[in-house]
Length: 489
Image (cartoon, rainbow, N blue to C red):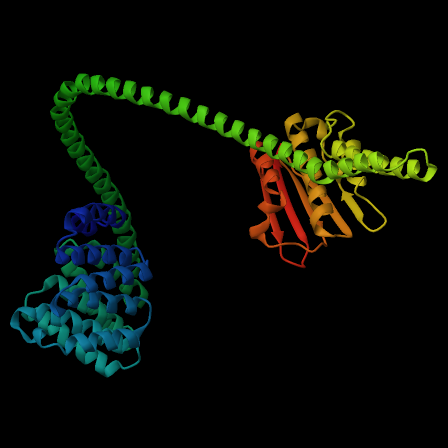
């Protein structure tokens, strides 16, 4: 079908049709080679020379024998001639002509084509005598093998050759080509012959040739357009009939299956829905329990920390004050002052513990509350710097997340005061439409990452995870401590 379309000048249609053959030819190399050769011919006729060479090369790859490669290789050489790459064409055609299989009598027509094209390439490359000899041999072989269609190309090449040397002989060859092409109804070659005659302008019939050229050209455009339409209609009607027959065969089977399929689908849907609901319930319960566990662990860790602090820092001091009061006479002024000093010291520590764990104001004073909490750790030897705190619109932040931020900052300060020995702490707040970012840095002694949980920082991680946030620590011994916190808004 694709070849018939090419004969009738429908090259785009030919490419479309031959492409449809590809799925049926994948297992047979010879068929793939033939398809690529047809695609190459179509692109050559459409003047898409680089595409044509690509397909011819693909055809060569898929051919199993050199005999099978001969046609696409010859076609590549012909494209080289169109591209005026005469040296490349000569090299390729000479290599083909040297092959022994062309000496077979049955290959005379193929050999004639190669000789004619090789001669034409030599002529175009400036080697007129060698070119003429080969073209003449090619024409002779075509006449001997009754290759009338091939002889048209030989006469056209000779007409081109003589157009620079002997206009009379050029006209003779062009007219001979025209006569054979007319007999074989080969329109493109007729037009090519007329072009040479018009270009030669060697007779009084030039006006006649011109009129004839335009008449044939207009006629062939109409004929080819009609062919395209007819061919398209034939393909459409054939496909439509095939589809209708296939549809009739399928409809009965589909009708028989539709009720059964619908029944199975309802059953499957019900099962899937049932298990989906169970899975959703399990996931909801799991995440609720997980969050409760995280919250409980955070509270438990906080309570444990407070209890340990009271025990370690206050219980011994209170016991010592009691022992002091029992063993010393309170009547003495200096003993009384000493006792009051010890009690004041204990009071200060109690206030400190209370302040570390007191209620966080989550209202409009939240920013001020955070500042005050941080400033409590600011001393003559330690500088606390907090930046961009006001850049966050805290009114849009969830209360639980505010409490979490407050508690985490408190715990960072306590950890810093207790372990880091830092004299500079920088806390930078940033935010975007989705998250709040808190970057903590100090210049303390740091620690190994494996010991972070032992320093009470695990409690921070639990708090952050409870609000679906992220906390990352970066620290090394004697190289400071960094924490990056991301909390979704």
